[in-house]
Amino acid sequence: MKKMKFTALILSLVLVMGVLAGCADSGEALSDEGKVILKVGTEPTYPPFEFTNDANEIIGFDIDLANALAEKMDMEVEIVTTSFDGIFTGLNAGNYDVIIAAVSMTPKRLETMLFSEPYLSNGQVIVTNSGDKNITSQEELTGMKVGVQLGTTADTAAEKYAQEYGFEVSKYDEILQTFSAMKAGHVDAIAVDYAVAIEYVQLDPESYQISDVMLTNEPIAIAIKEDNTELQEKINTAMEEIRADGTLKSISEEWLGGDYTSDIDTELNVVE
Image: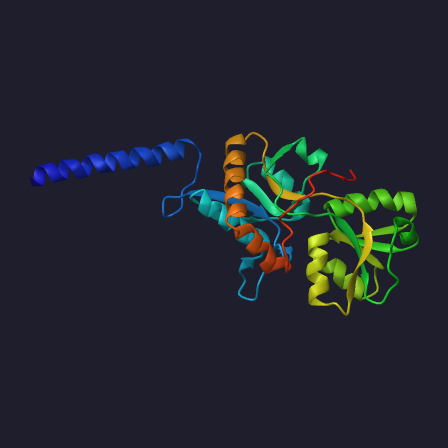
């Protein structure tokens, strides 16, 4: 009986080692619990999507989204931080599997990477100091200084419209720096994601206001390395599941104060 048990144990170990070897051969890293690791590239200075709290933990909308999707896919998230200016280069280099960092879909980006189904409505808006005259058209930006985060679609849109309407673009490494610059009077307005604008206005309505100018329509999605169609399919399936069970809506309500994940306008209106 002991010999049979010992033989069975050896066979079980061989089987387990074979499975692990298969995972290793496929290039998939495993967690301590034996789950495949999903490496997520993000830039944690972009609240409420991804930022570091007082306990030095990276939290936010996108972090909750990544964990919810990974749970559905029976994977474990590993966060890889990087600057947004180089985030797409890192994806192509294989530093991470996906980018979950409030990434806007654009035709140019679609040429070099895959995207999941959009999970959030978004576009570039103009934010000004509270009490300033409401801006209702791009023409009213003439002569102003507009702050943007370097490497974002706001950066691209502002550069294009600056030539057309005659305003100056000031670029910053982090989005928080743009708001600080406007509060200090270094810039007159900011071009930024609508969802981010909502967060800042809700936190400090006496300082900031969202204008009536929408520069672009660019829904937010997950960027995936262009040859990984299998992962794209898994993510889209998991996205459908968390949308159906209300998880995605709950994440939006928690971080954005409302549901911006339903009835997404997927028609791109992007400046490139």
